[in-house]
Structures are given as C-alpha cells and as structure tokens.
Length: 309
Image (cartoon, rainbow, N blue to C red; front, side, top):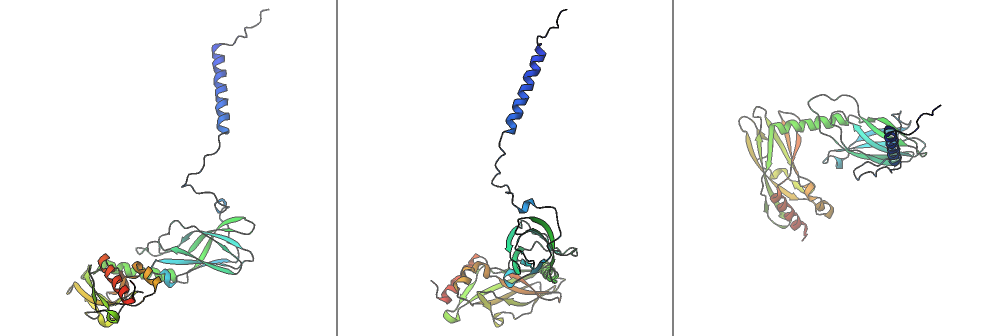
C-alpha cells in the first residue's frame, strides 16, 4: 500500500512563513515600553484616580466670601471648613456659581487639618444678565483622608446671597456701559509743587442713548490719588441726556500715599471711578485708567510729592 505524499506544497510553506511573521510582530509589540507622556500631558495623581461621585464627608462644608482685596480683580473665595476628626487633602476642581459663567482651569489643593478653615480664590466668570440664575452654588472637590483613599464629591456652597448682590451690581454696570461713555483726556497737567502739588485731569462724558438720562454723581480717586469734591468742575451731579448729550468734567488728583508697596502697584492703582446713575437708579462705579502720558504725569508728580528720585 502506497503511503500518501507528505512533501509540503508551496502554499503550505507560504502559510507557515506568514504565521511566523505575525507571531514575531506580536511578540515585539508586547515588549515595547509605554510612551513617555508629553510635556503638555496631565500626570496622573491620586485625585485623578478617584471613585465615582460620593456623598461629601460629614463635617466638611463650603461657603463663599469676597474680601475688599478681591473686588478689583473680580475674585471670590471658596471657604472650606473641616469639622471632621481627620486631616483632609482637598482639591478644588470646579465651581458652579449661578449668574456667572463657570471659571476655567481650577485646580487648587490644600491640606486641611481638623477644625481648620482655608480660603481658595476663584476668578468670577462673565456675568450672565440675559436670563435669571438657575440652581444653587456648588463645588466639585476630590477629598483624600490620611489613609490616602480619595473620593470625588459635590459640596453645596453657602453664598449668603453674595452671588445675587454681585450679579445685580455687575449687571447694573453693564447697563451703564451701554448708555454712557466716559473717556479720560490723554494728557494731564501738574499744578503747583510741594504740599500744594496736584494733577489736573479731564473726562468727557457722552450719552450713547440720549433717551435714557444719566447722572455722574461723583468722581472718586484711588489708593494713590484722592479727588476732593470741591475740585470737580462742574460740581456733580453732571447730567447727559437728549438735551445735553455730552459734558466735560475737570478734577484735581491729589497724591495721597507715599509707601513703596503702593507705588510698586501704581499701574493697577491709578484707576478713577465715576459714579453713574442710570435713569434714577442707584449709582454704580465705572472705572477708567489714564493713558500712558497721563499715567507718567501722575507718577512723576507722586514721586516729586513723596521725595522719591
């Protein structure tokens, strides 16, 4: 009985070669190390490996405050209060502040011991005036106890009515900007010397909507320069409306502080506030900063008044 021919055919040999090649490629891929994260990649942390949302730890609470120093920068502070019996590592990831767009890129971590509080600054997003606020304030946080176990949770934030007050204030300013324009003169003049030194400034007030009467009730100074009411000409209130769509105001800026810390912040501290009442409403401040020439004149006068070379 003749045995069957076992000689491999060309097709069989081709299949074996292909299978070997696939196996070799698979082995090579599995032994390749993982790529190094790029400089822009987010490195994993304990907080990023948290479990799904969980109830906040009993004893951890949040509230919202705003200090005087926060107002010019439009910041608020999320105050975290740890009334638990353990130290907590808390990472603030985001906040929901009804009436304002959500701020971006928040990631602030703090270690909070028992019976301690901490303020975490947050920049306010753009105010939303076109629709009424919906919902309540809250904060998304990652919380890790001493053991290192971390959970992500949403904390209710008690704002004590702060957000409503801020929104009303900023929407009133937005309304004022829509109906009136205030422009500082590009040039300022130094008057007098020594203790009598002042800097004369001028502002032009123009109505954008003559049908809506606007009053400028005061011109206020800043931390470096005071504005005495009796130096304002014409004396407030100054009205612009359909009968008088434009008005010019002159005032004297008087150097008020000579400490180095304030002068170092001069660029930020030389805005002047014009209190504007739209159609009889409560006045709100429209802040205006001098152009470069006016700024240099003011600082030169301040240095002379303070004896700074």
